[in-house]
Image (cartoon, rainbow, N blue to C red; front, side, top):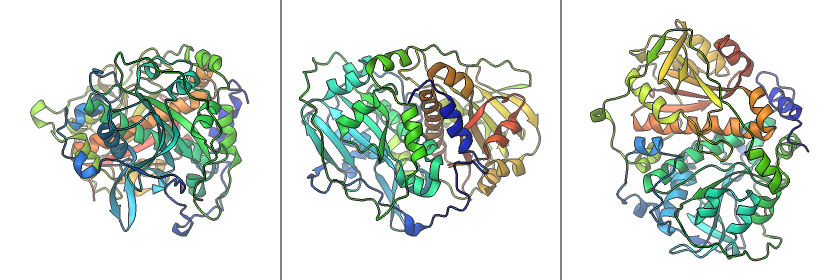
Length: 507
């Protein structure tokens, strides 16, 4: 399929809208008895145990949680060596098991339906404590399983059209989506969730790298089939989403890779039967890039983010004073983090909301943009924020201000927009990320849809972390797509809703 045939992205997005998207079956039902296996298991590969979390928790943090979130995707010093303990720390606090609730394992980052369909792989050269290879991360056993022995970084670099950060990195993480494990509940809308749920993990990954002084950035331009082949993925089951080079510095020359042979590794079935959703695979295929030249051309497209004028009253953000900022580590915050299931309707302070917005809602250091990409605009419904009048707002990150679009009490509307869920009405603030899809697709084709969804979810993932660092809660919610745009219009006219996260105090 052609990445430039953007009608495919429009058909997918419009067809998976709530309510009544034509690609969604209204009679579809899901129950806990249908939950598929939550882990990818290679039964014939021996686990390589990772250093345990109890040891990881005792390492002295370099920065606080909020500092890690703020620095979570920019370049770090590059003077810190990546080794097995730091890799274990990164994996555990990105996608590892941090708690059990009612005998269910809950992970470090939020996931729709707690179905945990995002998998992590490592492609690395020789590291202290770990030989060069291609590995799969097994959170169930806190272990790695080696898929290939040898240094295959050059294969990944070529698949990513010689992306510069990859060429300097001793290792890279690859994030994939076992889409049927989420589609069993969410049907064709799963492809949105692929980026929502990988984005919250990426927010953790970037913050962890920042806390350890390791450079990290986002690579979304790659030859999809090249990564499928390298990792031995079944493209009818699992799709590559993102690559993150880890570490940097001068490094050493990367050797020529061994031959990339076909992998035929047994994987334990996730369920006796999982329904297929060909539209998910079709959307991924339509946004795939066939060769390195296509990747380079895609990456070189120019994009000018919106610079909306302000017509309403501007309110400057008031972040917490330095003495009021929490000094916990990012690891402590991630262990505490959850998805709030009930809000109390009690207020948070405007200073707390300001600090969360400044920490979390900004651009990404990504390969598809010469400067931090800002593809989404954050809109807010403030229900209970001490120091900020109730109303609808838009956030201007460059000016560090909120613009009042409409004053008034909108709890009922916030609950309705959140697919009729009380969490939207009871939250102190509901934050919606909206993107100008027409402009994004014109620049980057169907693959721009991936970028827009992912950028919104990384921002939401940072807000999760910031909320828990600041002492309150957060949860991601789904929404009535067109109603969100209509509510924030005329300012949001032409934009499409990408993500909704609610912030507030636990009930």
